[in-house]
Length: 266
Image: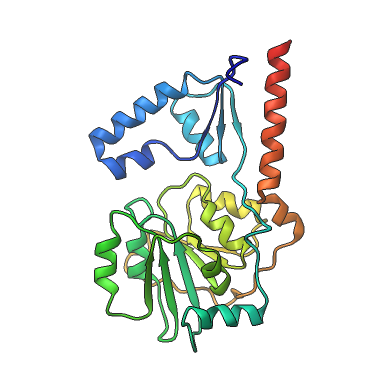
């Protein structure tokens, strides 16, 4: 595309909602405005979600923006049989465990993992697996290391088997683009229990509101308890699987590139 003078960039975050919590008010806003200037030099922009596109519009970037939602490899991230799930739990030492919750991502202010640790209601036979690293990793682990219901794995090569052995994926994020971790987890068989923010609602629309439930971040000191009607079994059709697949995402990118090339050649 550079040979044709066409420059395309995909935006995966909500700009200042990412930079300010991570780098502070001054440096975060400086990076935000620098990013905006850089984006204006591109011929076409792709937002990974409607939520990201909305942030671009609010930042006065309104021309030549397309939305192509993230997709995952559904051939890799898939559920396993009950017998395989039992074997995976034994492999990782989860004997006589009732419910397994999993989180995967950065342990940062924006991801709000401390909210989950403080508010998620765990039974004595439940486990909460926290996958990932980040600026709050040490403080979070230090606060909960004496409780064997909380497992901090740190950064690992692949979360796939943890998704496949778990029942619920949880996220209390304050801001997201379109979280791949949610798509990977639900594709691997986890029910999603997540904060009520626009990008998570967008995931729900892709799933046609199957296998996902929301909680409010304004709950005070109330514990997060899964509604009784929630099933541990994900019920996702082939149509929905395709809806969140990298195959669909690649096809949409192919269509976009073709249309831009055709337009450029006219």
